[in-house]
Image (cartoon, rainbow, N blue to C red; front, top):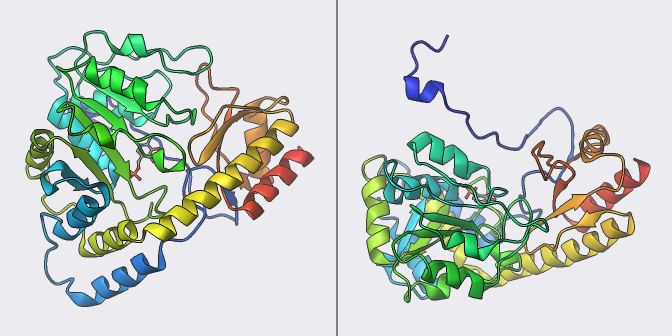
Length: 351
Ligand SMILES: *Cc1c(COP(=O)(O)O)cnc(C)c1O
């Protein structure tokens, strides 16, 4: 029944998001959402925005949010771009910087599974770089000729962070390519590359409010980089949809970014729970990779990961399992509240 489809779309294999089932109450540790609610100030700003003037289009320049980000990161407005979730920002970056007729773009073979999906969508060639046996990133392999570089730091789904000096080596070693650093999880323990932006015109850092700001439902992400890169992103956006963020999202995200105390307290709690959970999983015999994110990548001693995934689901605990080479022995477990993690550990005890 695909004969009416554009032939290019017919051949695509789209990204599969983690499940959001409604059939019962689950302890939901499968999509790396934050277990704590958004900032009360963000909720208040959104209530006000709903009542203000939804009759009117939102600001196409997203001034209120750009201003908040500018103050928070000490960057000029021209160095900031916002979009409908960082997935949209990534999709626009692919369109803006990666050439279907150019050299392959490079990213780790085990990384965010949306990168190969965007590459296929835009017809951009790729040359995945295998991570080492211990899942660390071989920096030298990111210094070969390429049509662009994507680093996910901390990486997903491994949770492992690359030190800033290594990120800088890759950015400095690729002056002719855009190096996109996806920092979706950086607030949970990674080192950000934001401080390198004024030094390297080829660096683009992408962030989201979905994880550390507890706003996955709002769909707000942003990019930070040299003003020429930002101008390219605006060209793509305004060739596609000038109103990617609605009035409610702009107000809520700006207030969340401004409420730094609340943000830091949530991150601190997630990190404390992560470290406790890691120790308890290790005590159960799991191999747990070092995590700088709000999730743990952990291999159960027995039975196999797929069986543990299925039995956890029966016990009402959702985690993520990837049936892929090299990582099919692992579960990706989002860090929930202490109570949710106790539920997970109790279920694992029964299994
Ligand atoms: C969650 C995630 C994103 C997408 O975030 P949204 O802003 O919700 O679209 C991007 N990159 C990585 C690595 C992620 O894990």
